[in-house]
Image 1 (tube, rainbow, N blue to C red):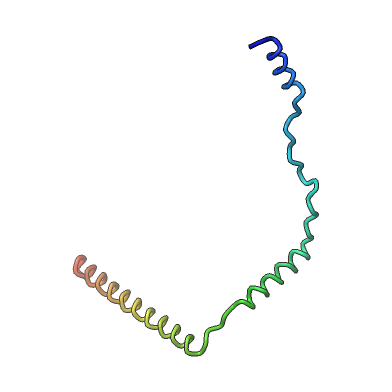
Image 2 (tube, rainbow, N blue to C red; image 1 turned 30 degrees about the vertical axis):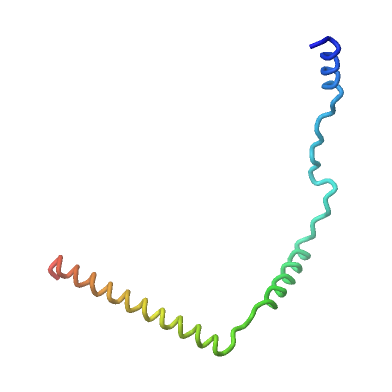
Length: 95
C-alpha cells in the first residue's frame, strides 16, 4: 500500500462521524392519558361487540343439543371407568 493511500484511509477514518443513535423519547407524539386510553378501550370493545353474530333459534337448539349429548357421553364414560376401577380395587384388596 502506498503512503498516500495509507494517509487517505487514515484521514477518512478521522473525519467520519459516529453513527447517529436513535433519540429516546424525542420527536415522538405524547402518549394519551389514562382516561383517554380507557375511553379508547371502551370504544374498541363496543366496536367488537357490534361484530358479534347471534345464532338463530334453530342454531341455538342444535348447539345446545350437541353439548348435552357430548356431556352425557363423557359422563357415561367416566361412570364406567369409575365402576371398573372400583371393582378392580375391591378385587385386588379384597374389599
